[in-house]
Length: 360
Image 1 (cartoon, one colour):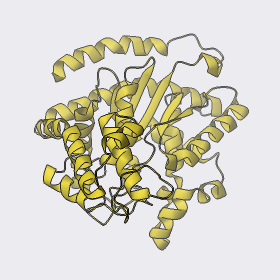
Image 2 (cartoon, helix red, strand yellow):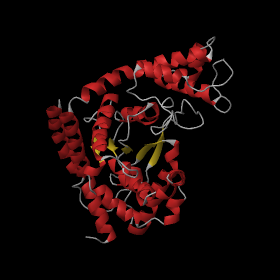
Image 3 (cartoon, one colour):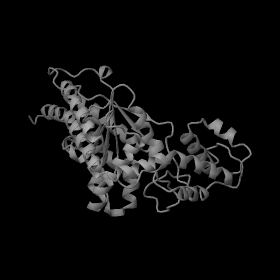
Image 4 (cartoon, one colour):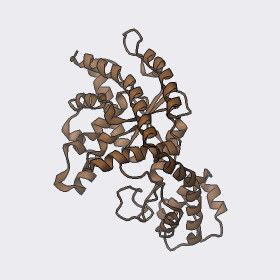
């Protein structure tokens, strides 16, 4: 399978090269830009229900739309907090397996490892020199994460939003799938584009955010917070590789309230509404239909219904992950081919940026 993918990939390279051999001229206006989607995910821990519904599921569907898509395993971002090297290496392969099992297709998209394309860090440095320190210090995630780490917050943690911007701009991306917590970072990306274009001429398109309908899955134990890989409460987060028994236990223990009826009212019933939103997302049914079908159930029985729906959704994905993880060579080849394709796109853009700023 890997060899077949390599042949098809080589066939695509001629097209990719052709994109960058056009005569040098003033960049086309943004309205004429080819649609290109970019997104990334950190290789830290197994993807959870929130990752799947909030990002990965939409990544899969975006592969079938016009234009090109790039999905990066952003290992450079992951070292903003300490990582065990052996664990990180395995996590990169595990994340690759998870994405492939969820439906990311290397023949429809470019799946690659961020650190294997050196142009990400080169462009990041150029952009870092264009953003002022207070702008980064005022970002919500810096405030929240540095507060948790007290005085141990690194410069990398402060500047990683600029690396995020470089990730997007390196491919002249036009659209970026984001969660609600990344809106501020996208505003930074857009401001950096405007600043760069104003100084050096129209070069980068201003990328637009794509917000998924399932914007944020909440913690099962604290419905005021989003579901997170790093939550210390093991019952708060459902991972896509959890066993059926683990999923049932986590939903049984999900925090709701003292009203047994199943309704959707996020402002006043966060816990039950989170369950309804999850149920709707994994079944593809509208919230109204989910509520109608749940009429007469109390929340205790409804939790089991939602758990069963999640188990059914994740069963084939979990099985495929287990198969893929047994073929390390295949996973490595997927990343190698994807990184080579990404570099074919990134290199000419980075070279042109160097010329514009005066390096070449």
